[in-house]
Structure formats: structure tokens, C-alpha cells
Image (cartoon, rainbow, N blue to C red; front, top):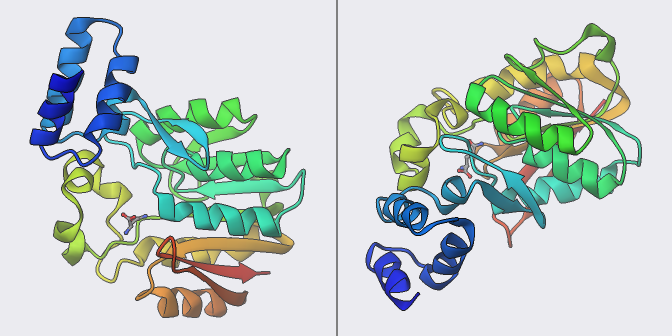
Length: 252
Ligand code: GLN
């Protein structure tokens, strides 16, 4: 165990002690442990190696290439649970692993959860996570794969869509750059291409008094708010200094 810890530490792991324990617990054989350690010391995120990430106290299934739920995004979940009601109809759009939708559905106690994503690897993970929470997963671009009968029905639409400006992708941490699909991060020239499309179409999918919650950055928040106002939503800004998180909320 000490050797394993030393090896992880030498490769640059800040949490070598925890990771050594996690990898030994996850591996079912000596050979598997060796391969897991090799993957970790060559820079693969620990969550993608063990197959799950912790988010809002839940274990969310992830696999190589899939966007890892960020701790900052727990703020969006917290705001959504505060605004939602038991039994709400939820949409997690650009859902990645499905972590946000699952955490909000769990927090509300009961919910009719729907989730969409365009990336096949994300859809594979999310299908498991979302169905475990009693929800339905659809593959496709934004709202396109949803059944029409859900039009005007969502009490909450939850979005952590890609919002990194293309020119800043190279500034992302190595684990994100090399081990998450670019499509899950790249938001185009100003980072807001996907937000722009999903906000414009949101009012039609929201129930009366329904809310759209969009994670964005401090710097981009003004534009995200303008987009929501242009779409006719009543807009508020929520921030958490502790989690370095910014969420724009629009109400129909
Ligand atoms: N800056 C964000 C992060 O890596 C980007 C997330 C995203 O594009 N959705 O946490």
C-alpha cells in the first residue's frame, strides 16, 4: 500500500493516500490493480478508472471520455431543489453522465426525469444513471429527441452545457483536455453557442412558471442573462463564492 501511495504521489497525485485506497478497493485482481495504477500515473482521471464519480453524495457511473461532474455544479442542484417540488417534470439537457438530473430528482424525492445528450459515451452512462433514478434518456441534439408531448411540460430545465470559449480550451486542466471529449466543453467562439440555442428554445418546453437553470461563468453571466431576457424569461443570477459557481435562472 505504501509503495502504491508513493508511486501515485511521484506521478503528481495530490490525493495519493485516498487514491491508493480507492484503486485497491476497486481492483478485483493484482493484474487489474497494476493496469489501473498505470492508467492513473499516466494521467487518466481516477473517476474514469474506477467507473464512478461522487456528486451530491451519490455515486454516478462514468466511463472514459465522459464529462466528469464538477463539485461547482452542486450549486445548480441545490438551487433547483430549492425551487422545485416533489413530482416535478425535469429535463437535464446536455446531461453528460446525467449527474445533475439524478441529483435533483433524488433531492426532490420523486420526479419525472428526462435527459438528453448528443455524445454516445455520455448517453451510455447516463442511460444507467437516469434509469436507476426512474427517468428516461434520449440521444440527440438538445430538445430534438424529446417526444412532442413534453412540450410546455417541464417545471425545471437544468443545463450545464459546454461553455468554454474555443480559444480557451487549451487553458483547461490536463485531465479535462485529454480525457473529456472536446464536444462536452467547447462552446464556440464566445463559449455560448450551445447556451444560445438551448435558451432560445426553452420557453416552449417550460411549463407555466417553469424555470430554466443554466450554469455559466462569472465572466459570461451577463451575456447568459441577456439571452434569457431576449427569450422572454424573468431572469435572476445566483452565485456561490465557496463553490466558485454561477447559475442564471429564468422563469417563464
Ligand atoms: N469551466 C467549466 C468546468 O470545467 C466548463 C464546464 C462546461 O463547459 N460545462 O468546470
